[in-house]
Length: 418
Image (cartoon, rainbow, N blue to C red; front, top):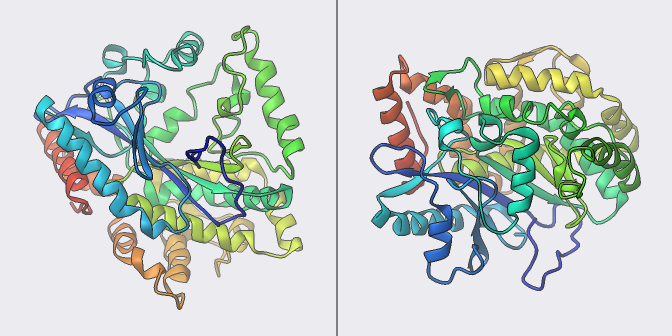
């Protein structure tokens, strides 16, 4: 959820608006190697200002490393269906501006052969002191910091009651999102054995201060005061010896898979890998929001049952999905019951068939907007599975061809099929 043009974020009730952020890599058009040129683009693009670009309701910016560009809607949108064409237009404009530099945008959640030790260039402009502090404490020249691209979904809340329900619902959805959206099976030029290697390295990037990420799945919290006491205060205390000037002691230090942003009254979901095109990203967002909304609307007794599901149990499902994605076997009957699955054991693919089936069977035609990309993910697997299938032996030539095709998918706004 991004600030509006007046500088203050609007206070919205749950599900009254959505903020989406998509991250992409800038790469050489021929070699596909990363290029640390985001500041060149943001500086030279017509109408850019202070290393940021505003184009109507859309914006471009950078965080942490120079080869990554973030595209977002600047104000909450009332409907996700309004965004795919808007993001497509931004991608095409960025690629048009990058073409004279022999560069283009690459999708997916990790560059498949980037060497972060050699190729990481930290953002040297605004907020530089934040990025230097992170680098000094955690060493940003690693996959877990420098080679990550994701979609963030920002969901609003207006008060403690909405926050409690939204937080409980999001906790339950987080573990299975990689089964639908994993797109990072390669790193260092080889298959990693994990469908979502991005989230694996992300979950360990701040191990020196364990309270920052916790178990990635956030703990059950019922109010802002409890959140500040149980999650934020321990983080600030633990980072203080490394950060005596307090540069990092802000709520965005939290690296859990969903974090409360009280500065804009939203919860930000962070476990979703970037897909091959915005249409796919927004389809994943729509499916996520639909499940969260169903869980949000339960009665008080069911809400308590949601909150009683242990963080460790949810984390176990998450880490299995990071490895096996849609092939993960889920046998936690209590968890499946909370998701209204009519059985005690299933694969993550079967669970998503059930959840998306509920979404697509609704009477309103809005859900049907997402049927084609979601059916592609269900029938052919998440993007990680399709990449692995297309890459075959994983040779350098195969990887280059696959990721060149993925860049074309991004430019043309189409799904990737092996």
